[in-house]
Length: 108
Length: 121
Image (cartoon, rainbow over all chains, first blue to last red):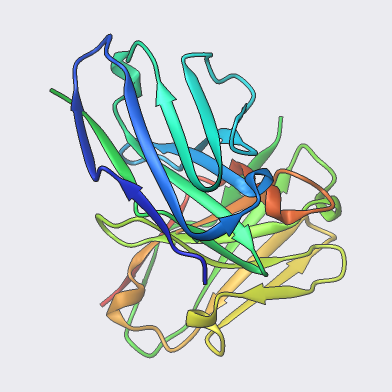
């Protein structure tokens, strides 16, 4: 099973700042199958980034993804009040899908 | 638009079974895999398994094998997740989520249901 480790667990930032979230895989994965989701309290997750770097429909360009192999990054530039949420990375390999433990982006 | 409408909240006793439904609309039901994901209170996301609506083939996470059954009804565009031998640790919100790509379920999930809370007590 491929384990995804997200860091930091919590990120305290102010609106307007840049958030950098990390997702590290226990073994190399195809970037084609690396996805980022955003989840707000009481809501279902919403897809942000597919294939490590392609924004989902309707996602603003302040969200960007990068990485390959075992190290992936989600960057949120110019944080808006609605961006404070929990973010999960996810991969699907060898008929098994796993999520990272999540990073909470909170208002400082 | 594409929508997934799940059944309502459930309260079950330990040892019982629960069946959650997910009705799809706005797209060709049989062309896209459907995932099930759960989230325990205050915890992260956990994948339960996946069903191919075309042939009904399934893949389950090892943790749930033997206790979970996923089925579909193509006449009503509905998928079902049945979880048996419930225990308190199964208390969670259960989501269905449509695969982004029709041929390859590995590209992720692009549309999610609203979630079904299941309480085991």
